[in-house]
Amino acid sequence: MMRKTPQLSFTFLTIFIILVLGMMVNAQQKRKWCDQQQLPVNKDGLCVDSECQTKCSQKRGPTAKSTCYGSKDKKPMNCLCAIPC
Image 1 (tube, one colour):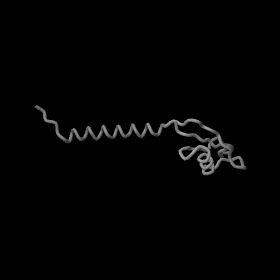
Image 2 (cartoon, rainbow, N blue to C red):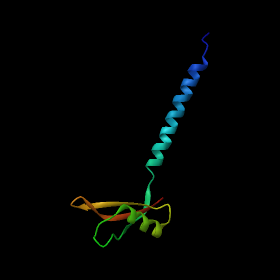
Image 3 (tube, rainbow, N blue to C red):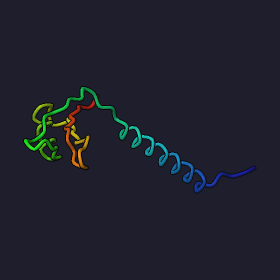
Image 4 (cartoon, helix red, strand yellow):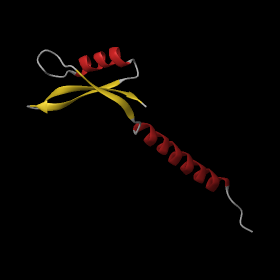
């Protein structure tokens, strides 16, 4: 009769926990964003991350996230604000 060693059981348990935690982290990173809205940028027509996030938080609340995108001469031109679903 074969005896299972505690080390083998511990190894499988550890691998299982690592896989489950990895799947949870991956699911959180793929969180979907809803209700996206484009916000105005500064007077120069450029988007500054700090200004974009401030406007987004004022408009949509503290959970809102913003990003600057679109470019002209490698300078961001648009501010996009979204809230999580």
